[in-house]
Image 1 (cartoon, protein in one colour):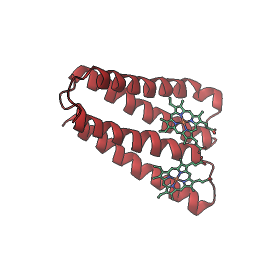
Image 2: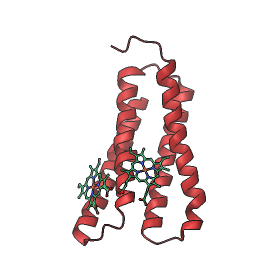
Image 3: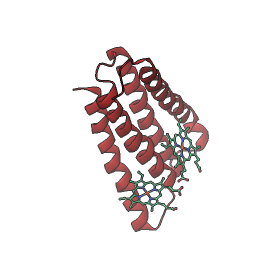
Image 4: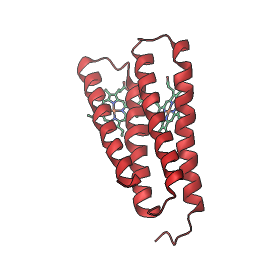
Length: 128
Ligand code: HEM
Ligand code: HEM
């Protein structure tokens, strides 16, 4: 399976999770998880989908090592970020205990973006 499809499949799972949480918030009239909801949908769904489209359109011959680093960094980061935010905003775990997880998540998501940035800038094609 290509990295385009891997990212799109992950994106769609985050769409379901984020919308599910949105429907829960709307129906319970408890919007306490809106930050979690926003990151599941914007970092998990939308950003993964954009990465999938970039792989499909402009990086069909991405170097496998770089693409694996990009994929694992972004997806591990999103999973850690969304789990950490859910535990934080649900009040399940005290904030100081979540700092290492959320710190890791932020760095991993940033690494995913930086690797994608490197691949895009270093790819020589005609961008047609
Ligand atoms: C089933 C679909 C959805 C439902 C039921 C839903 C529900 C909600 C609810 C109840 C809130 C909290 C509003 C507030 O307290 O201010 C919210 C906030 C938010 N939603 Fe959704 N949502 C849905 C889909 C989406 C999608 C697809 C996206 C983006 C791709 C999205 C992005 C956001 C963002 C960014 C916020 C935070 C806004 C803010 O307070 O700063 N939502 N949503
Ligand atoms: C390294 C990655 C990221 C970190 C560390 C981060 C951190 C944060 C923090 C600390 C807040 C404020 C939460 C609060 O009000 O209590 C926030 C809000 C927000 N972030 Fe992020 N963020 C990251 C990536 C992103 C990305 C990539 C997007 C969009 C694609 C995004 C969209 C948003 C939105 C829409 C809000 C407002 C949410 C709301 O008020 O409901 N974030 N983020």
